[in-house]
Length: 295
Image (cartoon, rainbow, N blue to C red; front, side, top):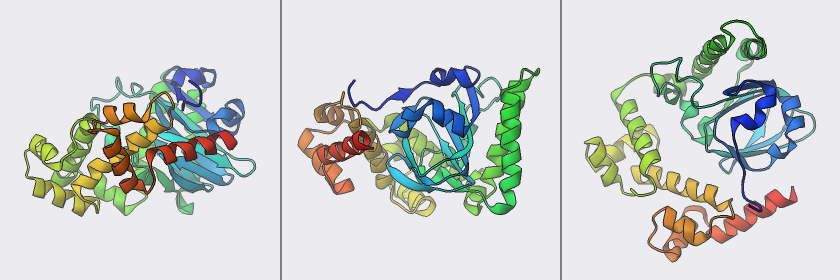
């Protein structure tokens, strides 16, 4: 699988902890797995809190400058990489999708937090100075419990992580608005979940509107009000994000990607991709893999 973007399983990091949860200071984690600076994916949830250092961090091809007391939340399947300027430290928490299943009755609990919605821009949060000590202490407690052999330790880790999620969600007015259970928020989440399940085959807003039992106009108004973009753009963004991810894997030809995403032919896929990003799939692949190989 030459040049193929790797997908890491949580068991790959088993030297740091239990099979479904990993908690570590970031410096030793990075020293042990230096290859993680290159583009890769995980099949688990991934949380990073930087406490010192600088550089850049890319999530799904969007780049963010690294700053102390900046926290990143990533869901399974996202592509990310980093490039640091000098020493860096903080905390890393990895946990499998099943880690909370036996602990929580609601299987969709994590999806209620906006930083776990799969959008790169929502997954990066700068922690204000007034909250930094509290968040740092919470990570220390999580690390301590995860590396101890105390009874009910993992359940306490789960409880502390939930506390972390709630505290972070309160840091912005936007999070407070979206975490509130409302008809529009629930409807939007259902739309996004349907896209996640069907983006390979369903491309039209009217198809999703039918599944949601609302009109296409209602769906479009909802997206414009809640997200500032049309329902069609929400669908296209997800389709082409997957195209970008697949293009970083040379095991997939352009034709295979076009077929998997249900485009009529290669030519239409290339034109649509160029309209979305300003360059062809081949140009994106060349640029991305050349950047990876020369870092």
